[in-house]
Length: 266
Image (cartoon, rainbow, N blue to C red; front, top):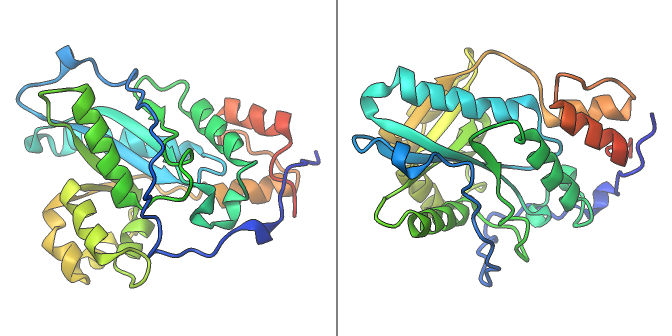
């Protein structure tokens, strides 16, 4: 089946880690409708919201699966830390971040809708549109700051901790010069990271080999997920060849992609 929407790859802007300061903020209300009701929060535990940010072009089953893995890991495998996951958010990045798979602003509503469909069946994971509704792309640290501010406004008197949920590739990028601003890395690590790694992952070596990551190793939680090669790029490649993506993405995501004829071969 030929899919029509595939903008020119030349639309993507080069990635510049020194930008993303977001001087002019456009307010967007934080929808907390799926968060655990306040009366169910355990007073003996630290309330934590998991935040993942990405292109989600398109979101795969692994983008949502890692939330479940992270929650189980913190609740069961590291129960002694007394962390209670009270919510989870997927935040699609702004198209001006520059990745080729983001295309342009005309494609952004499709990415947002795909994420909403991907989490529709979840009773605790939500899509937040604040990043994509800004005038420019936003650094991860600023996104986490905004979530922390908004959550503590909504749950006045309760200090909600935001933790960054990511894969080992993102952890590796933090130790690679020029990708993250060093000051931002420290702030993100102070918030805390839940890193989902594969069994053969070198996440531990990445942490040991970086002075800052080693310093904050107590705030980096490494959870192991089953090996799985499902990725957005693999999904896009399959679609461009007319191959099936069923069971790689949520059925609702699959149906939306087919209906709107997304991800044609460029």
